[in-house]
Length: 489
Ligand code: ZN
Image 1: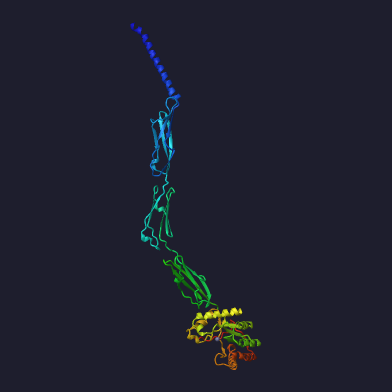
Image 2: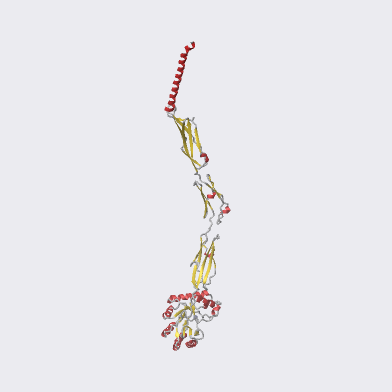
């Protein structure tokens, strides 16, 4: 029974404890609500330094770090809290060019925060070109330069020697290269100036030179000019032979070298043009071609009057330019005019075919100039059978008789000789010689010289004799009978 007396007291104490504990729990809950709900917490990560970092390739990245800022409105002052650990995540160390991100994160209880930083790894460093120094031997003037060597290295790409662009110009070699980021490098070195330009040969008259047989014996000329040595015309070697007297094409080569051996070779083709040979048309009936050589002279005018009186056309193989008015009178009267020579000097014309042709064309020019007639009729002084020429050049008549016809001329000899340049010294002798000759030929080519009065004096009688007997007088033309002699030299 006794024990029961105390029981209510104990019960009251326990209830007190219970109430106290309940009050305490309620207070703690209220405090928790105040601290963690009413007080608005926030956690922020703030990177130190710039938000973007540019890093040259190869440089070591040093992270400036970051801090955590915890913000709360009731109990904590705002600011960095070094006690909150920052977790850093970065891939900068692999060294790639381009963008990298560094991520900073922090956690405090249930609060999480993060921030990042951009790291840009760039290559702005230029490559380096290194030239191997030259051996002085390699730099001798005029010597072709031999590359001494070079390398190119880049901080990022390493050895880029094979990407170097090397350009050698006169006196200078340049080297340039770009690395993979486009950074350039350039180097150069001076080298001996080497002349690699050959001389230039200029051919007067062109590379194809065509001329009528016999009208050209001299090279029309050439010149050679070099960029370093100047005029090298005298150094030109000419090889090749032109047969000026035979139709055909003849290559002639011109070669010249400058002081360092640059060579130029050009070829000129000389074409010697020939003319087709003309066929002879022998006229019908009894025909006389009177021909007068070596004039015109003091008696030519009188001769022309006689010829005109009887309506006779003859042929004059003329010499020189001393009587231009007579040359014109011959042509105006309708006679044929042909070339004899400019000088009638055997030594001068028969020493060399070139001299002969020079004279021939010169006389053709005189006749053309004075009369307007371009004649291709001609007679060799002394005739084609002359032996005088042998004294000056052996065989020249054989050459000339062929060559003049290849050149388009037509040479005439004679089959009736008045001998007025020989023993006939009177008109009577001349007349008798000619008439005797006429009797022996149906077609006669008569040789007389109008520089002899006695020969001119014989002409009227010869005409009268022949006209009585029905002979026809004709002037020589390019298809007339030529009365060629046999050549004796
Ligand atoms: Zn003559």
